[in-house]
Length: 185
Length: 230
Image (cartoon, rainbow over all chains, first blue to last red; front, side, top):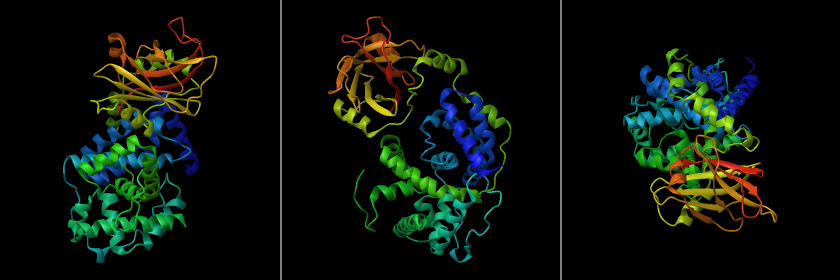
């Protein structure tokens, strides 16, 4: 399906949810649940938990759809943030990150595998983010990746990359601001 | 919003927003940031901007269709349909003003400060309509008082704003007359206090001086807001 058409379908369906329109929630679910389930599963690493959290995600969407502002945010970004936040909350409640393997910076490769099926987000935004991630130092990119995909905390990342906590905080903060500056260019 | 900077020279609120959106905060820090997202519109926007920047990265995660029972569990977890439809049918005449759900603004904090004490679970509502935030209401559940602070409400000479509480049954109950230039506090009757729960709606209509004499809004409803827990 055409990406922009998909985006406006999701945005329009989100707009009908505050009126109690269950069919609209079902439309959002049909168009986005595979992506969001993938995200929950990536962070939580376990099917049962990912299913529980996915349920919470769409109940949250039902309750908070009125907060979504189509003029300000992309519907997928809004949904992805809910899925990541709910998954991270679940991780924090169990007090462990699933993936705590040591991160070997030398083995880090840039995310060259840009997926053609990347679907709902515009390919252009995706390419731009990847170009900007590519401008970061390898250790910075590796740290951000651990946070984004594994739901790691600062402490987790410091342990995985064997650096002091303060160093990790500096890496992440500087990396985020480099990323922002690059995306604004 | 603070304009202070960390030791790297980065603005602190922006750093916190980035950290929250990325997900690196733990425990109390994460909870505190979450609270600020719910309460401070400016901070929520910083977080949303970071979420927008990072979201395309999720395209790198393979999609996987969830098993069919997940959708059934979601529909089971939604609030009962009849109740919802009923409320909306009864509220059909509010349409065009839009129910403002959930978004809590800094003005809510002003209302809390006005109350001057830290409450146990106060209820708040932002009364919005026509793209304007007119009033912010805070209900002190323990003392059964409601404080209404005018936000962007513009007074009219011939009509005065009246506050209504609309519980789940959809029938508006008169609370009292408001002022455009000053906060007003009412003590709720035990009957009204019992109805002032989350998901009840506060509405403001414009009425002749002295207020509606029919027990229902007679003038235009200029704004509504759902009661939520802070």
